[in-house]
Length: 626
Image 1 (tube, rainbow, N blue to C red):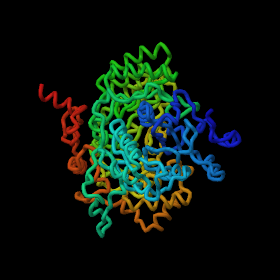
Image 2 (cartoon, rainbow, N blue to C red):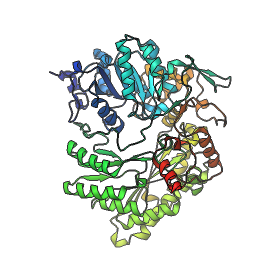
Image 3 (tube, rainbow, N blue to C red):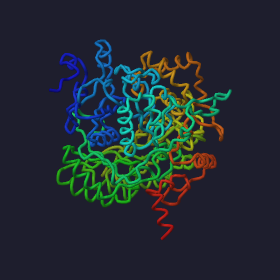
């Protein structure tokens, strides 16, 4: 009989004990004596966040389809349980078997955002796995990292044995077979890692060294074995309609962030916004077939009992089969009173028509993401959205009965001026005015609500803005203050609410995003001083981080405010995400000239992703041939 790792007394002391007991609907249970490999899949944040992540559900389902593998889950214990586990020496455990993580063959950690780096150390520490990969023995699990942050793994490379670069569906079987082969031959972990380094998409950081120039920039990367690959090309699923996808997603006992069926309709984005990392990493756009989506939608809803289905993608409006898919879902979901959620829609007549169909009488808020307040700056960031389109979308929305609009902007974008910042307030005011012009007095139920939110711009690897300087905390706060005062001076200011992000967290995220190997010591030291859950403002310790950088002799401005030269070697340049550095540099220069680049369906811009011979790149080629 399965025994819980935590006794009733401990479970009664912690918030939301259901985070730790497992056994949820559709969780996979196997006999551990009947499998060859045990794999713990970790999301290094609290259960509610981790359970909402589609990537883990896909990998969990895929690995558990292999008869010789049992994949289980583990999340970061919340701070209350963290303290108890340290005090009582309770090892971190997997939800399904409740067995200690240290007993597993693999610990796979998905790294979705930079602010979870200290939580990775928390997971290793509570599992009694040495924090540094070089200190691990054959008795420790192989620690493997995946997810978007692995496109610059260098700031955390000392903590991982291996990184899987790209989409997980393609190479895991090969990696696990190699592990079994090495174990059968009684080879040690070092030999396994050496051999793994030759599997496409695998990066073993301990097999490379980095030499630096006097100015602190990278001189060269040195492989420690002669024929090691110097460039690691991302792994990518070329046919997203015939691949792994969970028919029976796990249903949590408690409410989680995304408490619904998630149907990924496509991967990638055609738009090419210059600040957006995901838009570059997941190129080219690959659509799932209508047949597959219809089939999975029905099965997932039946197998979970969820009352909402969300169509997931970076830009849902660009999915070519959206009208047909929605007609099918509306017919199916209407019978069972299931809600349809459509994030990432562009605001136009078609999208509003769609939302009219899928939203009930009570209209929730509409979301626009203009990102910048002026057309000039929208051209700089290649956001294909004009003021005319925004106001026209707002007009149609107000006619359709919506009276609450959320607007997302960024502050601190490259080439931003004071005029661009004031433009945020002016655009909010124009949208509010549009409401009063569109909706007659007698039909208004109250004042229009405009909620404007600004985040602070963080330059990311593999974007045209990877060369751009980042603002200081003081500059960010000045920009937020200017935005607030500009909104307060507008005629419709009572209809506009303004929110902004924390500036110090944005600076730290910027350091990690473009950091190098020298940051490993900082992250380790900050964790040892008590930094965890940095993504949660109530636990973020900015003064500790600043002190730690100082102690380690690290100059923050080297990673943030410094503008990079065109020919600088970046810490992540040894990775190939499909988009070439030449293309990104061309886009950086286009941004400086305020030149707009058309989206992938309008024309091919020779970004490099066509070499994968799939998705939108194949569509363009077929068009040319016909």
